[in-house]
Length: 348
Image (cartoon, rainbow, N blue to C red):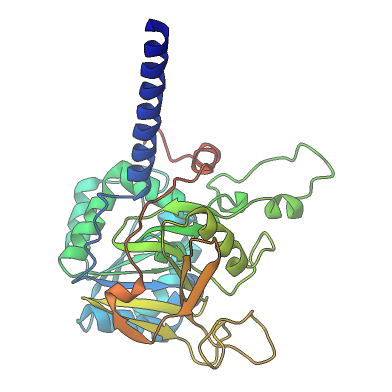
């Protein structure tokens, strides 16, 4: 009897430990407190970084959203490791419109946090680059920049970006953060002569990465594109959603965006650009003969495990973007991704 009671207690203790670990993973994956205070905020989440941000129309839309003729823009290029070329491509249209652009560099070295706080507090626009989402979010959290971003959004600054710069506003996203070509220090000499760099660049999978949880949902940029590993994002995202079925998916084509203003949203679709939205609005495979336009879709997984996808209306209430997650399942690939591409342990 005593042995049986001991076994029961051991099983119960193990079950409790597993539950605590699951809750810990659930909480950490949310990227924040678990709340979604986007109502009243202004967010511009695009399906691509350099493509959309280097488009003059995008810059005009973001500046208009800021409500000032010549706003002060803070550029966070952490996801590209503060690469000058990416900074130029993604800010040049804003400079042309008369914006004052201040880049804050923190990818490799510890910044002066007093100066960072001062710049973030006066920013009218915070523009986040594309690139390695996981590295950027981890770096911001290590430095406390994530809290400064939240504060800026609450006081009315526009939070904008595409690709990684779109994922960060959501609970999480469909990311190429395990692509070795996006690492701060890409892999060195190959161990096998038969393993070419081309093969290496395709030997990775998309993973779910955490965002800052300003908006609920799992965000997929470049939805209509086939990228480095040769896999169509739309197809890969279906598989990811089946693995993370407690969340609602928000899928955005390369030349599209979602603009949130207060408790309303609208979809931006660049005229003359390709996409996966058929003339009737429903999804079609990219490059089909009927010709599609850039679109935005909401995706859910039903109890039968099958995907339910519908096009987002051109505009609507914030609630139409999808419900808050029933639960969030942590990705088992986050740890190896962080080991392969770690943020600085000690800053210089």
